[in-house]
Length: 383
Image 1 (cartoon, rainbow, N blue to C red):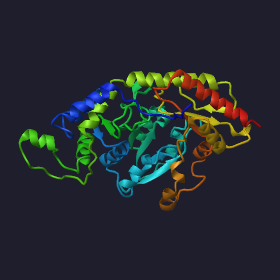
Image 2 (cartoon, one colour):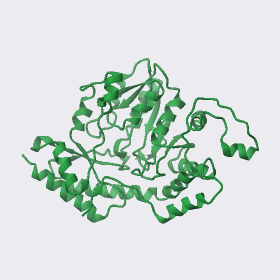
Image 3 (tube, rainbow, N blue to C red):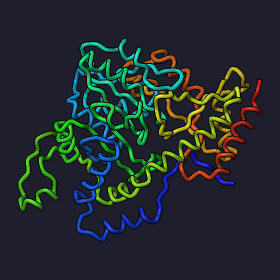
Image 4 (cartoon, one colour):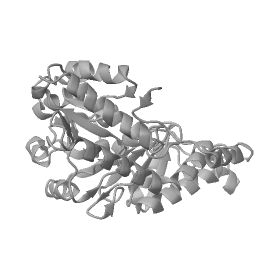
C-alpha cells in the first residue's frame, strides 16, 4: 500500500478544460477570467470586494500594506501559525507581537491579546488554525475598544462559518490561500476580501507595482499612460490560474462537506482512545477542516512525538506537524528577541500535535486505514 498524504489537490477534467480554454484565448493575464474569479469568489463568501493575488503570503502582505503598517507599528499574531502570518508584518517594517493560544483549539486567545496591546499596536491577525474560525465577536470587541484593525487569516477556513456568518465577512480584511493542499487551488494563489473600497483599491495597485491602471484597462481605454502611485509588487494572478479557480470554486461546498464527514469518522474513532486527543470544535462554528490535528497524551506513552511520527510515516500514513511556533524560529529569536517561555501553551502543544490525512479524495478504506494505524502505533508505545 502506498503513502496516504496529509493532503493533496484534486484536478478534474472540467478544471483542465477551463485552463485549456484560456490558453487558446487572447488573455493569459490581467484579462476577463481574473474579474470573473474575483466576482464569483466575493459572491461565494459574501464580501463586497475580492482582489486576487499570487499567493496566500502575497494576500497577507497586501493586507498589511492596505492597513498602512510600517516602522514602529506592532501587529498581534498567534504563536501557532505558518510563518507568513508574521512575516507579512516584517515585510512592511512592523513588529509582530506573538500571543499564546487557547489550549483546546490552538486559536488565538483573546484574553492574551488584550495583555499585549499598547500604543504601538495597530492590528490583530486572527488565524483560523486548521479551519476552525476564531472567536470573532470577542476579537472584534477588543479591536473596536482599542481602535485596531482586525485581519482574518482564513487560509485554512474557506467555506467555514462562525455563528452562521461566512468566513470572509468577519474582519476588516480576510485573506485566503489557493495552494494545492487548500480547499480549492489555482496552483499558487491567494485572495483578499473586504467591504472597504479604499482597501480594495490600494491592494489592486499594490499587486501591480503600485500602478494606477493595468494592461487590460489601458487596452480598453486605448491609452498607454499610467502612473505609479505606490511602491508595489508584481503579485498578480494570471487568467490561467483564475480559470482553474473558477472551476474549482464550483466544487467548494461538496469538498468542505467531505472534509467534515472524514472528521466525524475520526472523532468517533478516537473518542475512546485515551492516548489521542483531537482538537476541540466549538459548537458555534462550522469547521472547514483544512487540517485534522490530534494531540498525543504523552503522559500515557513511552515515546515522544518524534518516534510516533516516524512510526506512522513508516506505515504509509503521511502525517505532518503544523506548526513550529513562529516565535521559536531562529529568525525571530535573532532579530526580535523571542524565546522559549514566551507562549507556553503553544510550546507545550507543539510537542504533542500531529496532522493526520484529510482531503476530499480520500476513500473510506483510506480513512479506516489511517484510524487503524494511528491506534495501532499508540498502543505499541503504551506505558
